[in-house]
Picture 1: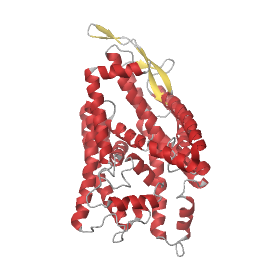
Picture 2: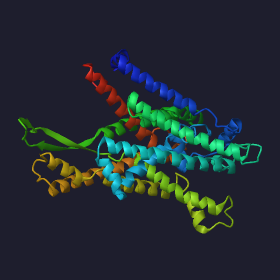
Picture 3: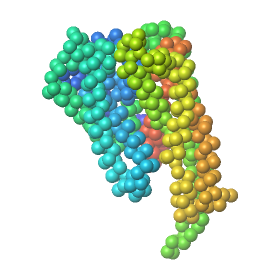
Length: 441
């Protein structure tokens, strides 16, 4: 393995790609610590130390920004607006026929969809930046700390000019992150956006482990490390698992050449939905909590009964009702997302067009029905797997009270393993193209 890494850095063009990727990652991490204009960084640090904001959607957004959100840095919004825009554009293919046509047009259509994703990313970045500034001024961003006009105000200058400048800076930071991610995809190694998310998650690992050591002692620390390694190995095993549906292509004449006659397969992964169902479930569960906050407004004396019930049962991850709803939503969204991203009829039509068939299954509708049957059976263990992995941090909250700093579970572990595997595979493929032994051998 170490020899393979040495060969990668000794190959000029691959070394150039790796160094370019590392340079972009370094710039991305640097931006997470540069305060936005008009923000009092000392007050931000004081509020962070006294606040508990690692709940609900805060935990997810702060995770994807590498901790930059709660520091109100120039990269505070992180990659989240781009992720949301990508998911929205992908879902719109189901309801807008034009988007589905663009998806089927190949590279030119994909380029157009990418352009729409960029525009939507900037729009969402502007909306998120406005919301972030409003939350910072009201004190809700950091647990009723840093309220506008108080000695600990996060944004001491409340003028319109400062507010507009801050919103523009945060939105520009989102655009810059998107541009850097596309640069890595084009000139570096791996998928740029995924690598930036991976970097944000990894950056928080040392501090999370340090907090476990300080608060729970070395015994719990080593237990967490061992359990983390075991869970990570199991996640890698499931992420690599797939059902291979065999496909044969009949021989046919094209001019004077004989084409076809090959055997291949359709890889149907156990976890086809990736981390998207977890993101959807986290976002949806945060909505009742957000609505109840407006009804309670810090005082439960005159609050409605429904708002008090939501505040007691759906805002804390250690509550059984929260865990059950979270798990069921992940299962539902897994089936939903797989259904809109893998179309058995489209796959069947493409196979029939090029003379492909599944041994023992007739072409056309029987093939589509068979693929749907296989997909429905393999999605169930994938959905249960996603739900169980996502519950690991919540279970850790109950057992060792380490939800804030438990790194081996949930969204972070799924993204970390998935992106790491894909990046290593790309480096391995490039090494093998140069007749070297790859990283995975």
